[in-house]
Length: 224
Ligand SMILES: [Zn+2]
Image 1 (tube, protein in one colour):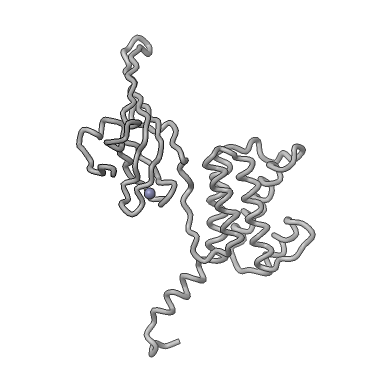
Image 2 (image 1 turned 90 degrees about the vertical axis):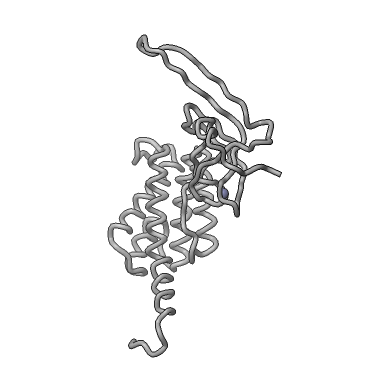
């Protein structure tokens, strides 16, 4: 099988700093010693503004350092910076206590973002909101009305509910040519949208489960 030993000289030999797409932990992904694909390197020498520049490229299989995972990832690096990796890195999130249909939508949004499919990701963020409204019993003819109805159905900050409406508008832009609330739907817009969705879901589903866990740790004789 693979030799997982880290060698000091490997630090300058294309170590990829990545968040694992499988276990989602960050770490130093080393090359796989006895894998033929690991050793591709190119040294490119040139000049920039009259000064000599050397770029070193690496490409090949890298392995997750988490010994319970050891997932294999293909990475291409320039001067030890990751240019591309496959499967791609994904935005981390906490799945605790999320209803399955909401979790599935959020996961799909994050996978779309990782694959640079930003409009598809924005649509799935909007779908995540719709699923949350259905699960919380918010009524209304459209998503705008349902988000408005959520204000009386759940107790979370006004800012987060305002954020939900912004996510709805971003999703509209992704779905309709004529809708133009945002200049563009690219990596940054979607990253912020996913982070806001995580905060929203945390407030609705995860704070209560944390409180319940803490209460379960109380002594039976503790005052109520
Ligand atoms: Zn891993």
